[in-house]
Image (cartoon, rainbow, N blue to C red; front, side):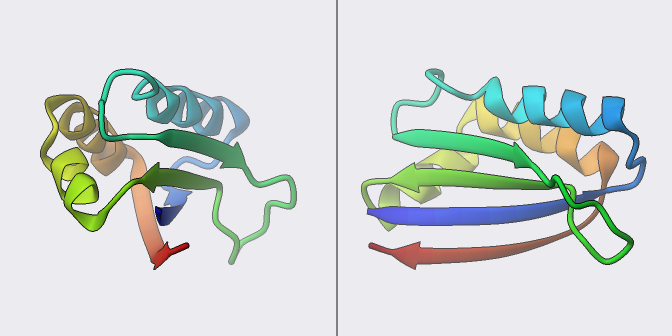
Length: 95
């Protein structure tokens, strides 16, 4: 299993913007065959240096992660994220 974690800090950090971003991320659920699991969790301890959302995605292999990255639904979501994103960080690991 491959677990990919993406931390997102948004330009507009109000509750509505964060919730909308979470909904957009979760819109991929069930729409990308290689995406085995997806979570998009909102940080409950906001702060200046903290991130707003963590996206946790699970794949069977690195090859499946690569397929996800070019999938049309992911590209649609990535375009939205690019429009609201201030900064991001990621960690990808194998279980």
